[in-house]
Image (cartoon, rainbow, N blue to C red; front, top):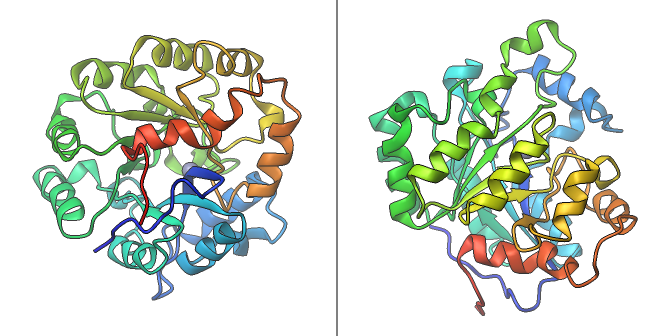
Length: 300
Ligand SMILES: [Zn+2]
């Protein structure tokens, strides 16, 4: 059972988006073809091996940076026809490293009633602090009402739901993109969910290329919708997003890397080159995430 051990006043930042894609039994989240293609897309220096970072390794990395990190994997057993790495194992690892890590759960929406049950179980028995979805990998339309009982359960638990949006490095360059459909990650599908669940905090992960304008509109319009800045080097952030970050979205954008695909040092170095109001920087690195996670201030 995970419980917070993070001194939120002392940490410099909160990374809202990191991946743990191998468990302590060595089981990986995805098949080898996908792992290798994704490593290439992100030009990972270590090649595909770099994609594999166990939960303790992630913790050590973030501890050195005095930064807390949300860790998750994706249960896409239906869409990817591959069993996920163990979420129980991930949560246990986060509990072991509760001075820096914050575990999110994941459920496969195709599992219907079982997915709803799993939400309750992961919150109640394991202490997860949010849920990660990847509509393209999980092959589901997030605004289909069939999945609304899942969102209802998450909203009831009072934790946020984070959805991958936009293009994905997963399957990039493979025939048929390895069967992965980008359309499911159109942020406009989440506008429906945000309207129907005003009490549910939704994070649209990544600059949602090629739908960034839509994403900015949604986050501007819906008080319960945020954007995480992971998955892209800030060097490549679309200009209109950088503009909005310093203005109407200053309380709605969150620091995130997509570790290990993007490393923390690189993200910060490239972020420093952006022309952003200095008053907004601490909001992006920490304050906005505290609100999303529902921990205004917390000492262990
Ligand atoms: Zn990611």
